[in-house]
Each structure stands twice: as C-alpha cells, then as structure tokens.
Amino acid sequence: MSESALLVNHLAKTYVSPRGTVTALADVSFRVAAGEFVALVGPSGCGKSTLLRLLGGQLAPEQGAIEFPGWPRPPKRRLVFQEHSLFPWMTVLDNVAFGLEMEGVARQERRAQAMAQLTVMGLADFARHYPHELSGGMRQRAAIARAFVTQPDILLMDEPLRALDAQMRLVIQDELLSLWESTRPMVFYITHDIEEALLLADRVLVMSGQPGRIREEIPSPFGRPRDLTGRTHPEIEDLKWHIWTLLEQEVKRLLQVKSK
Amino acid sequence: MAAFALGWLALWELAARAGWISRLFFPPPTTILLTLGRMLVTGNLAPALALTLYRLALGVAIGAGSGALLGWLMGSSRSVRLALDPIVTALHPLPKLAIFPIFLVLLGIGEASKVALVALTAFFPMVINTLAGVQQIDTTHWEAAANYGARGRALLQRIILPGSLPLVLVGLRLAVNGALMVTIAVEMLSAREGLGALIWLAWQTLRTEELYAVLLVIGVLGLASNSLLELTSQRLLPWKGET
Image (cartoon, rainbow over all chains, first blue to last red; front, side, top):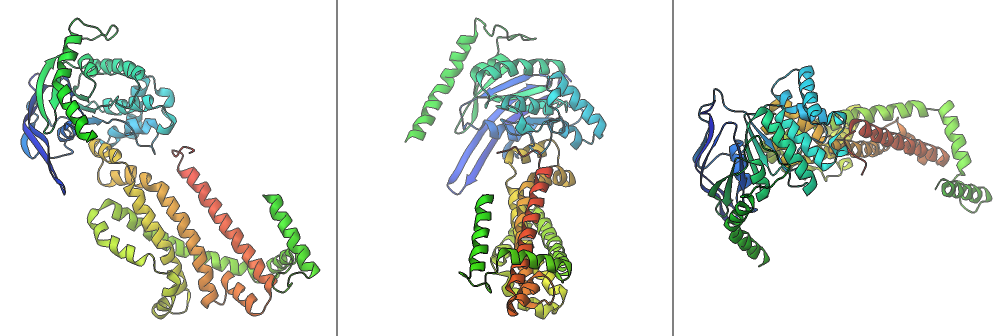
C-alpha cells in the first residue's frame, strides 16, 4: 500500500480548434502517494481542469503517461465538481447512493450506506429532499458525500468550494479534513485559493498556464492530524506571499490580455 | 375574468334575441346549450366523441411514442442524430394536412389513413422536444454519470430518461394539441363520423346551433387534455421547483 501512487510523466495535451492550436498542458510531471492530500493552485485557464479530467480518465493524454503503480487493482477515481453536479431529478439520498448503485450494490444496502454517510454529515433530515430545495452549501456537501460513500482510492476535486461564500468554506474545509482523516483516500484538490491549498494539503503544486506546467512544489507547514481552529502558522504568510509571486506575473498578463 | 365572460355571453344572448345580429349565424348561447343537451341525450354526439377520442388517442400513442423513442435514440447516439436530423428538419414544417391525399392513396379511405396523419402530426414535436431534452442535460451531469460508472442501460434509465422528461412532457402537450387539431380537420375532410364530421354536416345543413355545440365539446376536450397533462407533469416532476 505504501508504494501505490499516482505517477504523472511528461504529460501534454493540446486542443485543436478552428482558430488554432492551444497547448493546455506541456510536460507536466509529478507523483502523489496513496493517502496523500495534494493541492494544485494556478490562475484561471492554466489547464487545471484539463489535468483533472486526464487524471479522472475523462480525457486521453496526447503525450506522456498517467500511471498507477503498486495498486492491487486499478484505483477507483471519483470526481467532485464545482457546483450543480447533483442530479436534480434524484433525491439527495438517491444522489448519494448513485455511485454505489452503478457499482451494483443492492438497493437496501446502498441506501443504508448513503444514509449513514448523510447522518455523519448531519444531512439525514434532507435525504428525501430534491437538490433544488437545498442551499448551495448543503448541495456541495451532499456532492462530497456522494464521492466519499463510494470509498474511492483517489478523490479528484475540482474547486469544490468555489461557488460558496467564505464562511461556508471555513466550515466545509474543516469537515472535509475530518472526512479525509477517517478514510484517508488520495486527494488531488484543485483550487485557486492559495490559503485553502496550504490549509488542506500536505503539498501544494503551483501551476502556471499557457502552456500549463508545474512551477514549484511546496510542502504545507501544518502537520497531521490537522486542526484548523487557529488557521495560523509562523510560516504561512511567507508561503502565501511566495506562491503569489509565482502566480502574480501571469495573472497580470491574463488581465492585460483580457482588457485589450 | 369570469364576470367578463358572463357579461359577454349575456350581451350575445340579448343581441341575438333582439335581432341585432343574425340568429342563423349567431344563435343565442342558451339555444346552443339546449342543443348540446339534446344532442347528448338523443343524438349521435356521444358516439362521435368516442370515435374522435379513439382516433386521437391511437394517433398520439403511435406518433408520440415513436417520436420519443427516436428522440432518445438521436440524443444518445451522435451518428443516428447526424443521419436523421436533416430528414426531421426537412419534413417537420410540411403542413400535415397537405400530405393527406398521399396517405389516402397509400392507406385507403378507412381509419388507417386518418390515424396515420394524426400520428405523423404528433410525431414531430415529440422527436424535436425529446432530442432537445436530452441535449439540455448539463455537461456536468454527463461527466458525473460517466465518472461514477453509468453506461448503457443504467445511463439511459437514471440520466437520459429522467433528465429529458421535462421537455418530453412539453413535447407531448404540443403533440396532443396538434393531433386534436388534425383529427378534427381530417374528419371534416373525409369522415362520415366523428366530431369533425358533425361540424361539417351541421354547416352544410346550416344547423349552426349544432355547429357551436360541437365546437363547445371540442373546446372542453382541449381544456381537459391540457389540464390532465399539466397535472401529470407536476406528478412526474417533483424535482422541478416552482419558478
């Protein structure tokens, strides 16, 4: 188990459109160990989502390879999306049970498991509700429940808290950490929030765009198990500043390009 | 609203009885209602209504059913969509009544040609709306479904069918309304029985109060079918919030 990992080697991906070729990713390489929580920060349009869909198997790489060495069977990879990914035509319970249903778990069993997950997260009262009856924060928590209940080996999260306000984020970040501590899947967490990346992850990969590549890899100063109560650490401001200097030029360039 | 309608009817009644408008072409509402009552009790209204409903129901079942199936197929398979989309687009705007003579040649003057035309009318709104229903399913939902392992039958049952259902039901409503119109029209053109035939007979014999009575029945029929479909929609789509 200790050797199993996600290995990304010289990954590249280009999109061909009528207006030309866009290199989304150029020569991206990194390694994530099983049970590790890794965050990826980068400016909009740097190829973060493309990378996540490659890792999830939704897209096929053009060059390079994504390997999963050391797993007894192909690892189960499950995605958590930005928002509105619950199926509006299913109740919260059926949504959370959906992954289990597709794996062929019997109806009663999957409902019991989904209900247990909802109970852990304090959402049991909303099991029979439809997503439109829930707040954005609750919907996103149910989407996280849907992923965790399938006990994935690798959890791929695409800015899951992006659409939520700052206060909701603080609460859900805490919850996410305790969920992760209890089952310890590998997490690959995409965000544009530098602080969030440092607070949640063991390591932060800083990505720059056009074409997307990994600029630097930064270990988080926080230990495990992690308590976010204070959310301060002597090093954290320095690290935030350091990551920002890596990204600043590019964000400024992006804005100039857009304001032209 | 109701008061306005009643006032209008009272004015009509008064105008017709006072002779300000022609009683032949605009018989007073009370006469129409009495005629309707008489036709219901003694006349051939009930069998005509039954026959029209039968043609409508059979045509809608065949046309809307096959339309929905084809819509789901086109929505699920890119190659089927690319192959059939031009044909559907080309045939859809054709006025269905204009094709009726060809159906008469092909299927004879019996029930088959009438039901076929009703079915064809119901078919197109159903294909188009069902396909649109599948296409408006959010990209994220397709991605989530694929990532959690949905494919084949499970994808159809859990994602494609329920996801497209709101627009399928809109399509069904358009199909029923169009089909009712064409059923009556076809009966006026070539049937000896049915509500459309009754209207035509009443017109040719200048029994206009009967004409209005049948119109009233058709109006109620349209109202009833639409309310029924609306109710069905609300039952089948509890996940559609009030907007």
